[in-house]
Length: 421
Length: 79
Image (cartoon, rainbow over all chains, first blue to last red):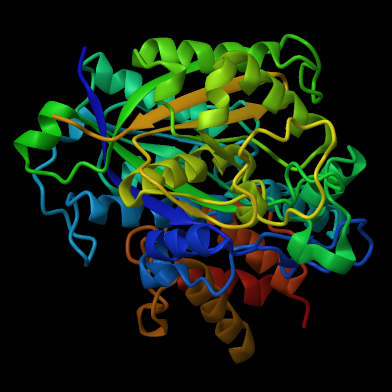
């Protein structure tokens, strides 16, 4: 089995349009929430989201190449560009500088939903149209959820495996696991993985509103994403992309790459319980963490930081903490827990990707990002847990675990550790 | 008449991301302007929308160049 290391990362989120900005946002505890700009939300119960703003994709991507892509695909390409530069595969101008074997490199990049904005616009245009039964020929290739991976493989000439994984809000975690397996089993030398999501649209907001999943704190949107707070009232929709370059240790060392972290282990499980509600005892989530630790050959006490799924929903937050307590036992009191969704909002299929990037940054820079927007303790939550409220903490982080769970009861846990030869 | 040609050129420039200078009457969408088969379907749709007409598929297949499009539209669009 090959060891799997991280040699590049890319981030595009409401708190930073690149990795340095994202790092700064995580350290300073920045809220990415703002009134929705992509459509007029007046009719909707929720009128804010964590949108990516002040973003011009043409500063990295060719205008002609992106003109027929859904926003979620552009976001995936944008973050991949940053990650490949950081990995030293491409130079600052985006040109290939390492002689990568295209048949040994691929892209497994997730999206939970895909090009919802495209589908929505096409259906509305059709309903308003002259009756000519025609849809735009680019609708399907813009909408389908695999096209982040598809376009990355085309743009960067990767002929190894490329596809998307779909497991709602756990999609990015499953993508990373699949990509890591390709390297672990020797099927590829380098894999681009992660996820992207862009559904701050009428259907996205309206659909989650109907499920009563979103916060409706319109009068105080900056603090609406408040995981573990007694007054939490739902998640705040985020958008963006996270990309991670995984490489076999041999390949990375041979080309003299800088190693940011090692993928220690990962595991997936299912709740087998309900379409959207978490198992009340965290039965599935617990097993994902236990099995990820087993795979990583790590003890619970080795983990310094858990980046939780922690979406700021009343049921989900406490169920996850129960699962963590079951998986970690007494060792849970010696580690830091935080939900970076308090800052970025919930990026759905890209959540695991940007949160894995947060874990890698935590290891690189020895800090724990905070759970911001904490005001009132929830009596249901064990007060001995260190949920890293409101301020980031400087401390050595050698091992970090990222949890993500999706509608359908899909759970994924991924562990990163400091690289030691 | 001139305004039809002008609108056609504008649509092609917008949709294919090409320079206006490249959009000559003889220019073929696929051979000269970098369009693929999906791009040409989209162009036909834009022409339909802009000029409020319906172009039957068998006619659309014959519209391969800028000149073809202008000629077809000039004859089809109600004066």
